[in-house]
Image 1 (cartoon, one colour):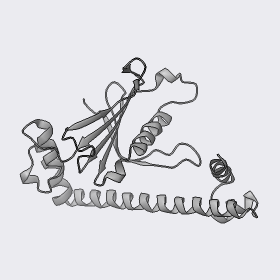
Image 2 (image 1 turned 30 degrees about the vertical axis):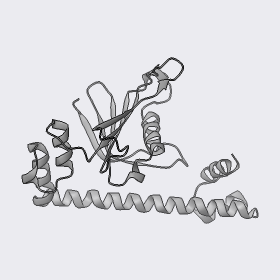
Image 3 (image 1 turned 60 degrees about the horizontal axis):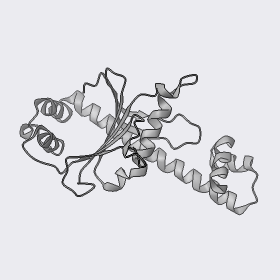
Length: 220
């Protein structure tokens, strides 16, 4: 697999009122397949429902008005998790949809992979997981990883780039928290039952369309 295009901290919000997500790394290969690579230190950040949402957001991003559904590209949502999420000692846990009645792959082009960050060994994969968890470039197996680590930690331009990435991540986390608080405000005002939707929109800071969508979610 060769990634020909990659963007870090990719904002994927496409639908008004939908929860936005920021992909750690979003890439494309020569065949047009899309890849979302997420680094998760805690298991709660790799909840299966989150993997499902990440996968669905890539679908929305890559199918435009007038296109046929079959034009959707294959997508790969890859979670590299610090611990062994499933506890079976496997290096990778591939998640695929299957037709239960026939025992065959559903073949919808959606692929989810849980990577065991604890995995070690003499294979290239084991060495790669070692490097992912290594803080010293001199201790890494792969020169490409070592060079990138040196750049981000020792080169002034690299340090500045890393600071910018960390700031973007912090801002994204703050935005998600603010958006969640706005939603809770809407739900509380709807529960009170004495506010017009326009008033709720004005007080919460959300659009009337977003308030209507939250009302529909509440009543579902």
